[in-house]
Image (cartoon, rainbow, N blue to C red; front, side, top):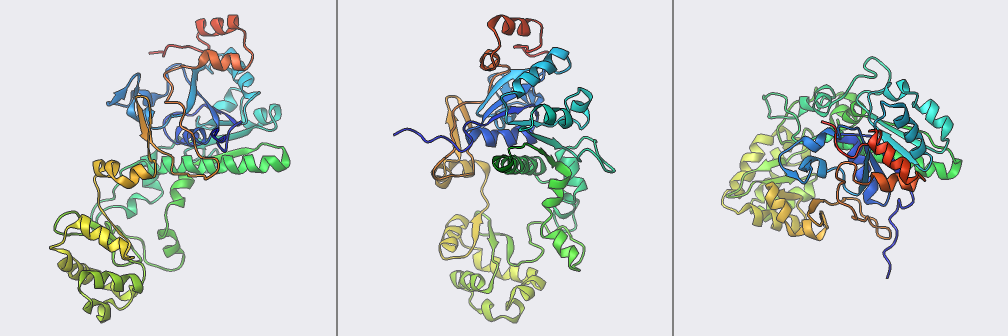
Length: 398
């Protein structure tokens, strides 16, 4: 039985982006069948050097973001490089880039020009702050947006300093928002036959993550505070100590609270007026913590977490990275991908009829240059000249 085509088979994407948000976006699209051509500058995507550790010619960081793509390099500072980009765009459905706003326009390749030449093209730009407004055109970085969008103001221990989330959450979410925008535009194109400009800005994505803090402010709540692992609106909802592994409880209603107390053997807490509903539990959060941790102090956290979740109490053990990767459910969900020597994180997007395909490891620098150029009808003689003249270099510039 033949493998069904992935959902984006037949869609070609030119990926001019570097670092994180754009490459994360295009890896998602490549996993689901798009022919993604990663076009790097002559110096290469800088994340190739963001190690150790390294695998082959690139860092683990680069390998985590560029699976499934074909690779070439192109010097867009040269006239012929820009002309070649236009040739590549003739067969492309989507262009993804994260140049500083104004860069492509300076080269005569802004959306006004590209949209006129290629009316079906979907042009997705990932930027820090968008192109206009008080901060329009300024570069954006994940940690800077975490600071400016309020994420750090609500992340950290109560009474402690603001804290950056320990992963590039804004970059990743911006990449996912770009995926959403591109797929929306592809769907709309089936009706109108027209492409459009899609923008995903880190600043906007950072603001969009501020739930429930912004709604709390909108409806008259107090200014958000850092509460460590505790939830501002729900209790019990934080990390609790056991005899071994700590666990995270996320108890959102009275029924779940009753099940928790029953399983822990402290049913008296169910009728305790301090904990009779979520509002009182929130006010008496510290007393509730003491009572629950007292009931858990002699129990193995891993065993207890399994028992609680099986009984309908939302919770999970706080696992280290090695434990997560070794967890049997990680394997069951096919969340670790191996292609030869390559190992990566699987796609969280599961489609029943058109599942994702993992066919290519991340490309070495300019690995597929000749194949890509021949795909668009370039003669072997011209391919050789383009490489020799550094328009499409096959060795990374130092």
